[in-house]
Amino acid sequence: MHTQEALIHIQDYLKKESNITKFHECQIDGIDLADLRKLEKLGYLEQVYESKNHVYFKLTHKPIESNIDVLPANLFGLIVGYDDIKHVFGKALLSKAPVHILLVGKPASGKSLFMSEIERIGIARYSFGSTTRNAGLTRYLVENRPEILIIDELDDARAHELDVLHGLMSENPIISELKTGRTETVEFNCKVFASCNSIDRLPEKLLSRFIVLHLPEYTEQQFIDIIVSVLTNQEHKPQDVAEQIAHQLVRELKRYEIRLAIKIARLCSTIADVNTFIATLQRYS
Ligand SMILES: Nc1ncnc2c1ncn2[C@@H]1O[C@H](COP(=O)(O)OP(=O)(O)O)[C@@H](O)[C@H]1O
Ligand SMILES: [Mg+2]
Image (tube, helix red, strand yellow):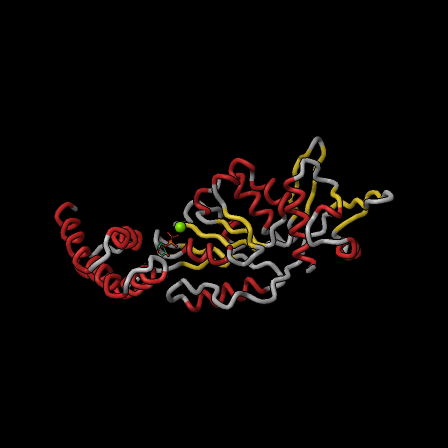
């Protein structure tokens, strides 16, 4: 098994076990003793005990090196336009050394879409949100040692989470966690991909560690193109219905709201439905 894949299996396994320092080599599907010995040689595992039938290892604190060599061919395929940004993301994802990118833009500018596309690469395993809040970002990092950290809506992060993030993005990232009375220190090699609506509340020192890309507002034509693309590809609407929704919403109502277009699409199956719905919206807005 591939080193990276094996390590991720092991980390997943350890997450589910109450005893996180030991594991039993036979209990993880697809990983055999030869894999474990290889990981031991590479410095990721340390043997702690050997009995007649079993060998026990524990994870060392060696950070997992970037191992993404190829990106899925259709990565970012759902995103209309932004070829230049897709190119930068592609380079950053393949870079061996960490590069951090922050997308800034108004709602519905496609930021979450970029984040969820990155999640499609198998080892990008994390999205910022309520679960992190409860578990704590530090705990998450120490337990998962992600190679890629995705933080959608960074504006919502609390001050101490921003501090943890700043530490993670420093030259020699080390995260410490107090665990049963002693401090666990873990080295990191992690890229951060984040998005936010505004950078106003974010500390300058944190921003300086990111490549910051500001997404401009879409033009009317871009809105129409995106709406048609989203409605045909994601909502599986016929082309003519999608075009009618886009045209009516953008050109007639001047409502530049992709999410509203999606709602209308869910309620309308024909051009006549669209016209009736738009008239109702016009009457009551
Ligand atoms: N460039 C784009 N290409 C395709 N779909 C887009 C694009 N920009 C926005 N969308 C669509 O618009 C909606 C809102 O986008 P989202 O990524 O959630 O925006 P944000 O996170 O910036 O608020 C989603 O359904 C998304 O698929
Ligand atoms: Mg979003």
